[in-house]
Image (cartoon, rainbow, N blue to C red; front, top):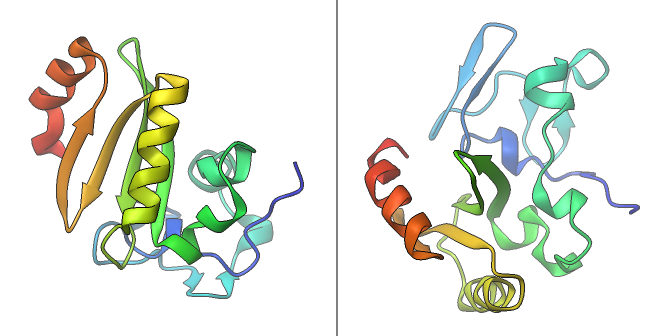
Length: 143
């Protein structure tokens, strides 16, 4: 695949959470080193674990169309693998999820049988296997 972030900085704008070189970022607080809509001010020296190894699902999954790039849709998609479950975690990044994005996610879920955890207007919703639904129901307060 030949995709790159270019001027997309949604994963660093304070919609996801982490710590880079001692600076926390989280919902409402962007990464200390991000220049929004430009890029990372320490890109060449960014930490491996938190930044270099991070892969936005749009970047690595060619099944996700070009128009779903996070800075176009304001949705960050992360593929999560934990406790035997695989799911897409779809985080709103500045705007309410559009019907077109939600429709695409549902079709992807139906065609690929992947569980979904998605945010609409700040609230969390999920769809997937019965076991996943029970698992995520118990964890959703952590998000």
